[in-house]
Image (cartoon, rainbow, N blue to C red):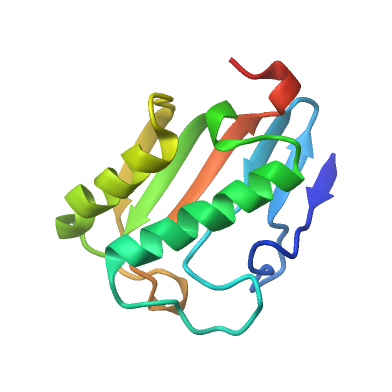
Length: 130
């Protein structure tokens, strides 16, 4: 088991790793729209802009682990408001293109830092990709 840490994504805001690699799999922690440069302010109060940032952060963590968005097997999307589903889905679809990993989307009462969206992923290490 190996912890993943990259400066290209926000540092963990608690006692956890950005991701953990076990054998040929990577398990990411949830990403919210914080900047890699630090600070605890969300990028913007727009769910579309937050989703773009979340997916960029997720991509950076996956790449540090030797994986990529194309090797994602499963994601979980946490939304502060299910009315945001269509917007988040459109950004998500653009980021993943024709690759369609399994996915769950759930509405939650509150997310860390009052984020509007959080996404985590389980992926294969790239030399085991589809």
